[in-house]
Image (tube, rainbow, N blue to C red; front, side):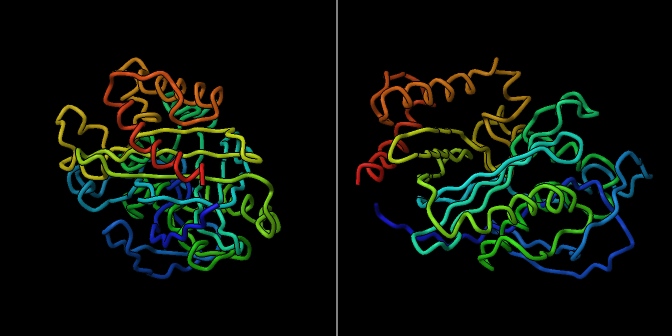
Length: 318
């Protein structure tokens, strides 16, 4: 199989962005990611949660939106390598999922943490929802608890992902974003530490991933996992741009920084048509064991999928 090295500069997220503490002492760190400069207050241990509090607002909604930024964009291009996955519940039922990809030398080339909110989450809308690709981060940003930190779950997690890639390690202490360290320290870091020995040898799982901008403010992403050369997972999604003005269809601008598959509001407006489409693609591919040997559909979503599938199938066939 062809080995493809990818230099990832994605530094962004950590945990539940519902924390703020006077201790431990924070240090300013400047990070560049996805063309945006972040100035984070970082710490080397957990911060104290302020969950459930509602301090007086320090900014108007417009002022706060101008000060906050996070990116949900996937790495552009093709990634392929040995695949590892670890998942478990933590902190009252939140479900953490950590996926790693290494090259043939065991070097980390992709690190991605996802979290589903607990089924009994206090805001029912987000029960079992993706904290990364729904509007969950906007929900956090609207709360006055984040007026001091100006960070969300996404900022905390991507920041930690970037460190693991840059330092090529999964254990030991890491810096985390102050005000957004719970998911990073209680969810992602324990999962990563459990995997530190795993990545020293292939488990028989292989990852093929590709993401490409569609030119309309959407990025198409296709991820395939094989076990002993048999396709066992196929995930297709389209991710809206980080800035609403980059989305050409004004009716879709409200879904910026979300994905078609995981956006709760997009799913509601479209009767989950995209979820049904993507799930149907996976079902067909698992049956045929070929990304292209599926019934044709006359839809924009299918044409976007097919474009990426051709490129990824070529890599699988090598």
